[in-house]
Length: 141
Length: 321
Ligand code: SF4
Ligand code: SF4
Ligand code: FES
Image (cartoon, rainbow over all chains, first blue to last red; front, side, top):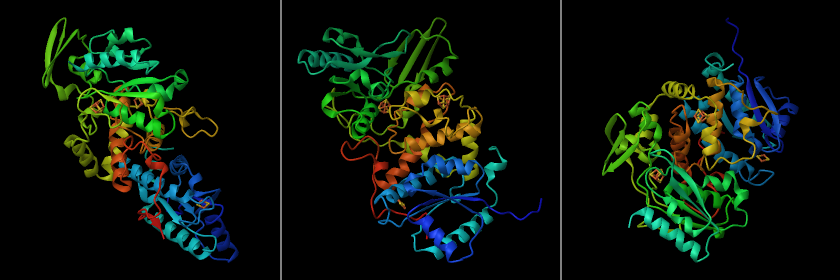
């Protein structure tokens, strides 16, 4: 099997900033990685850690979480909670021996279409280097 | 006066001064080396209460698992260091009203883990236990062995840093503040020294044993969602098998749910029939939380629990910029 590896990156993007940023990237006709599979959520803090895990263990090679910049959350403090929680999710991933680099958090505002495109490309590249989600082969699925 | 006598006296006093309607403590179990939770509703029953290394149950669990029974009642409760932290957390999370509880701290030197004893005796029945300083002698019909205390103590106690209550109304003795514990450091260093692949090997080996009986969850005073994520079937977050695929999800998510809330009482590990070291992962998470956010579960009674708090200038080195 020497088909080129195309990562799948499940992305949870908050409606008010990151998803709108992704929209802007689209309407500005910016090219970005087709690996990104966006899912709109109302706020980055809506993303229960179980979502990230489910996405990962269902075979996503990477999971991206996008929210408004600190101070800009539509619900004022949602992304601060996200940040604290995310730090611990990564930590637990590491303690168990799972690859925490496959989980990324980024702040992308509604006006940052180019940033969205850049993050999408960079993360795809990082995942390409990491290779396929190992849990897909070893025990899961 | 030993702790049991002091405890009985305190209970009697609380009832005669009409300060409590019910008091939670421990009593002699039906087998040697066992104790069982005791609900006292009348000062005259005070002499049934005991406290010694058999009293492992974290009684705070009754506030969250079956709170209705205490509605409107003033509850007295005997707590070890870890139990007190549970109670503090419950108060912080608005599950218990501070005014409605009378907290009686007991000085704790660790509780025994029945599983460790059964392993040493090969499951033979023990009829007599004698404590002698740092050693414990177990006697049965056809044997007698002497073990070091550390061989029979619960692994949580071997790694304990808060043996005495930090929040109490009455303390039966002199309450110690945080104590140092090298076992705890050692256990953490051991995990930290492992490579990612070795950690995964360990994870797999431990959680492969899990039979999903949920004893660990049920006994945990911090686990009190009325519907646990493992029981939800729409959406179903986790498959129903005992394959590592599923057990790892269970333990990972459970760990996250008790992150910043686990008081390290070790009730989960003592309850686990498969002898999984459930506490290690929690210790690791607690350590990281302390490092990052400078807070420990069940110590501070005011404000919100650490994972419901935030600071604007928090470290965010993992953000993709
Ligand atoms: S964890 Fe600490 S306070 Fe709790 S029973 Fe063990 S020694 Fe006592
Ligand atoms: S008590 Fe042990 S076997 Fe039972 S669900 Fe918990 S970890 Fe699994
Ligand atoms: S709405 Fe964007 S992070 Fe809360």
